Length: 155
Image 1 (spheres, rainbow, N blue to C red):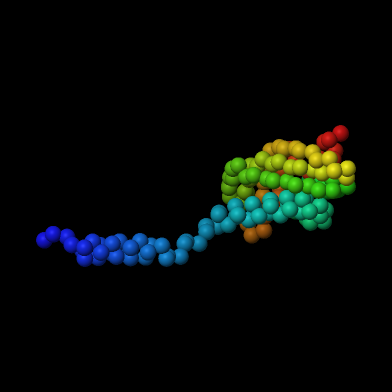
Image 2 (image 1 turned 120 degrees about the horizontal axis):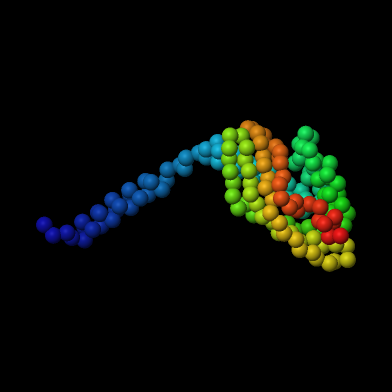
């Protein structure tokens, strides 16, 4: 028996129904590790946004009280907010590692700081952010070139 148009049509309908059956399934829920990495990235973005918005209270709240450099970070950010009227900062995550309850974000950043006279300055660097915790992640370590402290570095 030779295939006819009806056979081809039935074959196409069968193929489409098999394909569409796989497309309408719910995606699997994210793993706990994926959620933890996503939360660390969200924390990093919130830190950057509070700095860009020049909100010292929100910025310093991203550093736990037990963080060793908390006051230094506050002092440096406060000097930046006094020296610059606008801050545009972009952070890029290059790599992520997850070991037990510790998420490490390896990043590079680029920023533009505009002073009161309208002069724009560019700076860039690399920064490693380490977050620790299960349900609520805490920033426990920063390594590399911090994006805050530009007012002190320019001198």
